[in-house]
Image (spheres, rainbow, N blue to C red):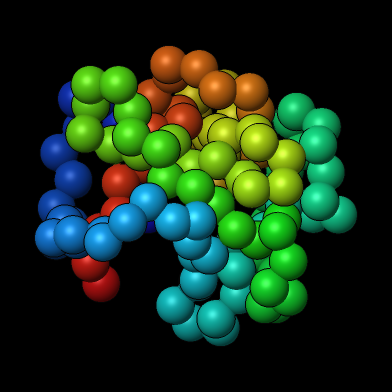
Length: 114
């Protein structure tokens, strides 16, 4: 997934068609870990991490189309909160947390081919 940063030119090959809106599990390519909501937290601000595949609801994410950008919101099935780059940061190493849905670019993602 590629985070939507308005005004930045990203060179990734887009995914042609997702088929349906999920939910999905997002896998890290090298080790096969999943995007994980630790401890199935329902608290806003919980930092997301990668974890071995447990097939639990805290590793399942819905892709919800953003209103006008062509990007998606990643909504955790267990918590109902959105994957959000903390404080909308564009810095390398910025934390990704879960947060209530909003309209900021830090919550907009798009699938890309690898």
